[in-house]
Length: 265
Image 1 (cartoon, rainbow, N blue to C red):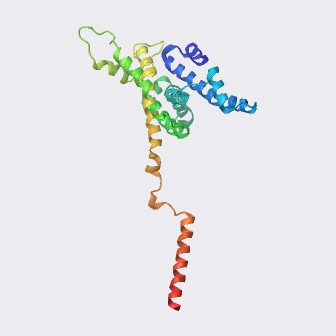
Image 2 (image 1 turned 180 degrees about the vertical axis):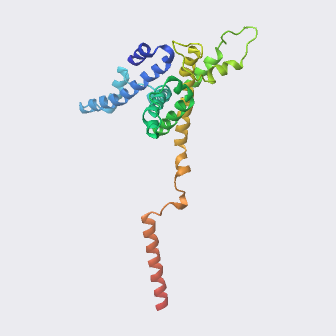
């Protein structure tokens, strides 16, 4: 419960569902470590396995469906973190560390740089992390898109166009409001260029949606071994195992011995 409380105090209520999932993911990690250790401690005390399970149920220490709940929370949280935190950080490091090596004097990145590379910063890190993390924790890794999509659909259904007449709604505007990304960050000096509420909606709704989809696609690519199929060796080009080569050599020697014996006969 500490994770959602800290998230609300530090970042506000816009990502409350992801704070809850982050807390569930942390709790699942602790549960996965503490529960086996507790059972081993009881076993060392001479408690039988059946009694251990009975005590665990009586004490409320068994978390029903912990693997499914924990995996879903972990992958969804990881996808959201990739889009909201990790992607912008990588983009800033690109401007600070990489581009100066090419002779370009960029300096520090700005909010405008992030919005101009909005899709790239949201998709690429999540795609890579989803592929890598699903190799070690494959369960429900392809489901990271579900919650962000539900949030986006809810926002689309409850959207009311600013400054529009109720008698003449324009349904297409709700999609452009979220998906036509603002390319300049609003500032206190100039609020005329960009709508801060719209930018916040795109960052807190569209970014998790993009990163969740990219994360799930990365996990799906790992499940089907896409990189191995694209860049790996084909079965016909793989080197033969040593055992197979040795067996063929033995068979050749046997065949030569049989032919020699037939000639002598």
